[in-house]
Image 1: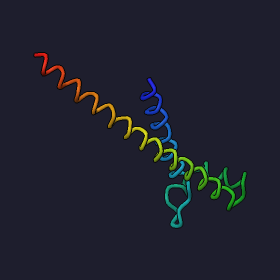
Image 2: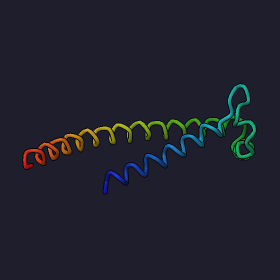
Image 3: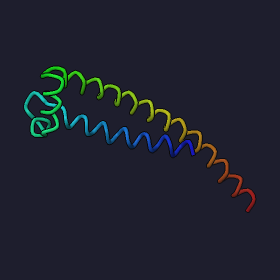
Length: 94
């Protein structure tokens, strides 16, 4: 149960991270320059305020992504050991 909750949060974090990265303006214009949502952020927070906010959100999502990836990796390594031992027990019983 806990594994699926972590996976769900991980997938949602991935989707938000991709969205936030695409919204950001790049030095060359990029995809963020063509999205109207960024203009609304610039109006609300000023020219530099929106960029700072988006950078902070990106940093928080990236840290969350890495932490969840490590947790899932550790959780999977423990479950692989358990499944290997179960497979060995099944072979011995046959």
